[in-house]
Image 1: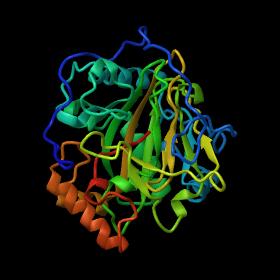
Image 2: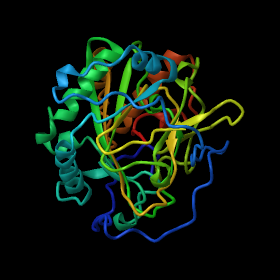
Image 3: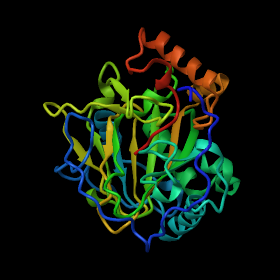
Image 4: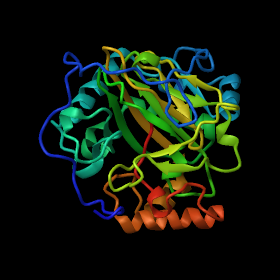
Length: 342
């Protein structure tokens, strides 16, 4: 298969395991190290809890400290963005997508850890790209509306919802590791880099079931970290891996309760360890970028779908090469497209 070939679909048949049917236990993931494998961060919880989100989404006002933390660290945590009832509704749709009761074509339903030949029932990280495209009733839900209001406070006016995504780790999957990466390594480079990517917890999320860890201030580095294909060939798996520098990087975990969100910038280095618990770890992502950046993506034909055509991904890589002088991520054309948010 050509490395740019996107025509192959995910393996037919099978369902992900139910919450009551955890996968077989395996060894624990090692702590974060220079090989790029995240694990236990071993540091205090991120940024401190914020105030409770009020029931009126228009009344949610971030504090000056929260806005400054986002600028300084490249990420923050917001508590109780959604109510339990709102989480219940999103969970219902999430499980319908994960069980394939709602059809998701091609590579937009995939395992983020293995090659495309792995049977669905063996997936370690279940990934659904663009759920609102495949289930239109999701559009305009309470989560999207509140996230849009927060994105405007963090990033200013003229922000647009770029894409959404579901990322789920079944119980007892210690191999469900999202390696260190920066989201911008997968996206077209744009002049306006304002970004607010939201990760909503549909479960209690801690280090034992693979919470996301972030490296403070990494979004302010002058260039992206080098990224390499996880398996050396992106026709087998699309994942890119950046390197953590233990001498300077101090990852912090985003421990979340159901209904909480983390929010991060496109250049903030992050990753997550495997799920060694008996609980699911299900996250629902909505990502906002500057409206001009989204318009530029769409003009290129780039939609964040893993089914985007190979020539689109080549154009995206070429654009980033021109913008950066040279591509800061290894792998040439293969560094474009196919999102990962841990």
